[in-house]
Image (cartoon, rainbow, N blue to C red; front, side):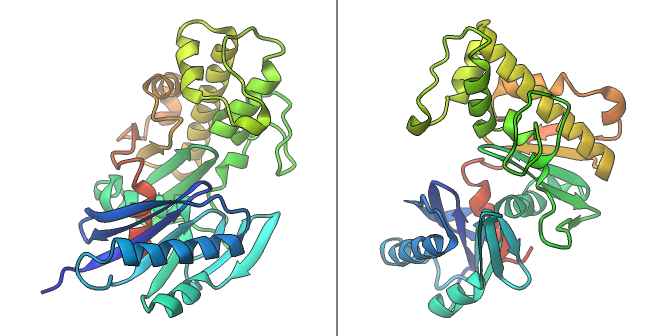
Length: 315
């Protein structure tokens, strides 16, 4: 008897990860591809070319997968299979699920990338003991997945969870692309820390290497290391970022009353940063979060792939 497997595609800004899992979330095969797309049409061509290569060079583990799932940046209608937009400036609604299903003759489902990762948490992570949790991903940007009474919140326009565009009481006067000032994503994410470093280095001495803007971002691990060594700029950057995430957590806790808060993404994976966030949480606000604030136990390198496979399973 053939084993049931599911195909996942985790599409990020710089890479596409394609892989196959079984019903227990075990990753059977995978392969990484470069992405670097700028619009949805280009992304579709990258997906098709990469998937063609995957089928030829990696192949299936046990016959054709039962279904495929795709995790995408931006606003996604998972029920209709429509990828609406990457962001408000890149909007080109496309019936991506139907197109991929027709080409590869495999049922296809799609979802937003962080909502997909939240599905992975619900199926193989903290969802095994919690029906009320918040998943906060802090990487290049910040986004949130919220599960209440076992159901994931999506909103009327599939835009729930864009918590990176909330203010958190850290006031630096930085205008966000959304039109507001001092959104937490501009302070506490990887891109935000980079932006703050370029602004605040005029007022705080530092030994941090700040590359030219066209040569990449500052290394956040260097920021956290230098903070511990007493670097004035890196201390300000780290304190602001930690306070921003702590305030975001407490705001969200007040809104949805979770028993667990799960953190994922490269910024919070740093032990010093994680501890810096925890010590800024107020006990009175956090008293009902009975399972605490925890780092995801799912492999951060593959949580997006697992999420895409959970989408394929329609979990």
